[in-house]
Length: 587
Image (cartoon, rainbow, N blue to C red):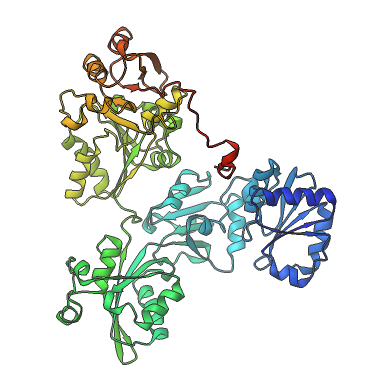
């Protein structure tokens, strides 16, 4: 529960304003703070002088790990300051939230915030990791914020490690395996890893959820004993129990009491699979007995492989549980494993600042960037870290592109394949993915802003008109690559939707002729060259003048043609913000 305490009419007015803006809290006017209220609330917001706040909470303070979060703000809502439990209790986060609601100034005084450093105790909450640290956590955090030499060990790849790699302070050095890390050289070691290492009392461990475990068992095994032996087995195999991500078994064991209890205790959903799914896997330790009972030669191994889409890290372990047996097997989630990996990144329409935040961070951490030549501004590759190899793929065929990426991949390095706009729209990634699939190479796609979106922004136009145009067609003219008959421009033109035509300025005469079969000749057209680049040029005309406009302005490569009445439209406006649609205002 969140409680707002006020001591004046003005303070009460500010409190009601906060609640009216969506902040969920109970408002108390001139309350007497007692132990019951202190215990019931996880956050207090005092509105008034700081002295009142301090005097009220002083008798109840016990321990920073258990005390509720406390915030103080002035009655006019100009300054919002965390007083207690800034990190662990979330006071800093809530203070910033209130400040955004009111347009106030958050006053954060914790060292990590004022120094623009990571809040080491907040990283688990931020990235869904589990924290494992000894009693010297506070001391190590102090050393970190004081700029002591710190090692960052990253043995997984996820959203959190991407953030750490691209925002690390100067006193932090990154390592990707323990063989390169000399413990004695550092005062603090931050280890993001599912693996058990003995790094001494200098280490703070962050356990990412990336171990997937399959389970099998005889009927009615002891539930408490099962959890205990699982922990022991994982430890013996060098894995942290805290990094368990997913668990599963065969469908006929879904009601096994030990598995259900294990699921509840770990807060992990027990996933169940049929023999058809499990029998598809070639496991190292098949069992005729298991196949006789379940229809699959494996349960634990096949489930682990199925959950992780990866080979086994821990093959089937037979666990003695009193007079019965259980089996487990583990695999590392392929999506988070730190090994060779290729990321297709959408560069956006051109402006380096229009790449996504994630795309920028991927570029900053890549070991090799292969970018799409003249279609992608070279400035985007300037995000590369020192030591990153950058090459243009202009003039490369598919085999050459794969050959350029493969050596980096095989060495366990990170490759970014940088495509213009969004890779899924005329990005030619399908052919590359087919080869990668065939060779069992791992990849992922990060979307980008497409040039059709950049066109709408440049034209200051909404490409849909209520009750008139509700569809946007993304297509191209028919050049050397034939178009299906149903997708010819003349067929699409019959709909008179907003049409964004890629890769077609060189055949503008043909494009104009086909469009005139469906659109009126006075239909607005915009010819957009190198949208968001420094050389951007946008020329408006009517459809009847399209070919002449393209020719007169010498617009060919990197040009999009936009056609439709939505261009520059300011009529038939949406009713979304009319009075009868008040419920939609917050959107």
